[in-house]
Image (cartoon, rainbow, N blue to C red; front, side, top):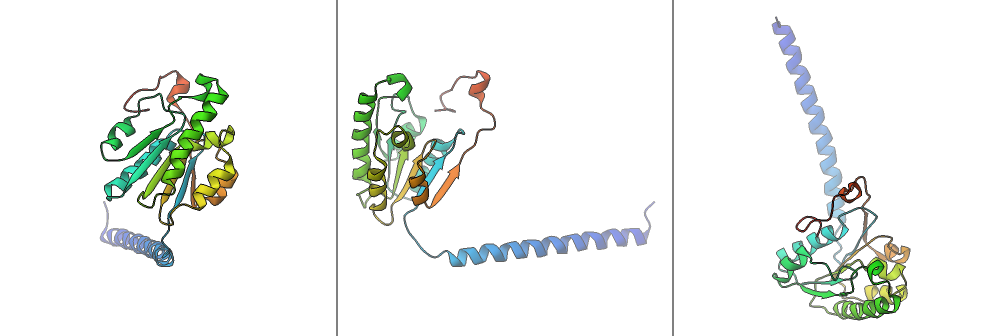
Length: 211
């Protein structure tokens, strides 16, 4: 049976833990507040989503949806995945997001370097036009990294367009093995790493979840 002294001791320990927790949270808040106060610059952000894990394009489309939700004007250029139906495209086109699709599909399916290079250049010309358009608040360049790593697009041409875009325009680049020069230019870089993937266990890609 618990005595009054034991109850009082338990209450005191609970109070001490609560005070320690409050002190930790106050210290955390002070640090966060200081960072918020220091971050006063406004500019267009270059976001790179790279790595071998699943979800890079999905994350990019989420940012596009966020922009649209705030009344911003967004556009998407899709490299590689053009022959697949895209659930995000189905949704976002209905919300006024312009899509420019390379349309040749995966490069390992076409196996035609000349055709892929020509298609990449056409898609990139659409991207360059968007990157010069001050009315576009957010541009997503989905799977652009492959076009650079396969040498379908010249990295210096890509960098020039990114550097000279409107100062408040946000850009999202997705894809594996992003070129180091683009990573160096970027403001934010997130790397998605694979831990497990259903496909490796023999589960096929499914509409409404994978694409």
